[in-house]
Image (cartoon, rainbow, N blue to C red):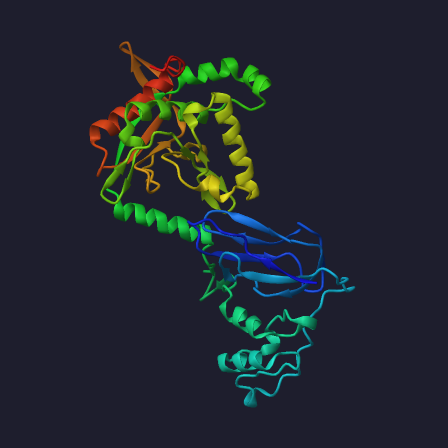
Length: 392
């Protein structure tokens, strides 16, 4: 029985996706739920598993193809037995002399429509990987061959000046699009402050071993900043709001995005209802996000939405930056590296571990007063962590 392998139903916010790399060849056996190919959206990479065990008899969409929800990408014969070796395209025909071979379209193992398209495009049909039965080249194979992304190319004009040109991943292209959109549509300003990290560092050093023993997760700083941000957003709800046309949408919940690095680029998974979570639950969520981001296993729903974002460039050594708002949110907090700096306390110059904070905000709806005071509220909570326990 021949069954079709379909692209899963994509979320409303994702209109199309790109097939990355087939893990099976035509003629190979596949097990039920075995990953056949990775599917890249502008948010995450998804796996497409085999719906049934059998033999992969046809690849309808090749590597690099753009697909939509429920598109057919392959076919599996559930009654077939895998051959000893994957089916291969027929050997290339002997090339005709260059003088008479302007646009070869030979290939005895190619369908007539495939030959015609190849000839019109000036492509040797023997260079096209066939996905039909027995390696036969289909019309779709030639079309996919023509539409496939260009392979990374190294160009060396003269001397030792190489260049490499590679296409953007779908995620990188989407990030670029959203950042440009944010700068074009938002009236972005940034307010800065500095925070003395010593009280928080002392608290962490005192309890980190017991915290990890009791909760099974390390006690970091990000959890405290999430808590501090939520406390500030409660005091200044406009910073937790968003713009929808000419309306301001006030959110009665606190979904905090935490920027996380991954092999595919920056992703921002969302801590839902962060105000209702304990410090340990927040730290566990962040640790889980970081692990699955490296494995490419974050779900689309985990990267969608959010009312406020925190980005920590300090993990890479950044001293100061102006973070870009993640639309449709209205503000974003940037954390930076903690450095020993000279500060004045009670008339004396002393060394303290200082972090610079930056909060970018959409000046269309957030006035300077709320932007500055909300950042000061975050600073005060970090410099006196007891405030987070007493809710003051």
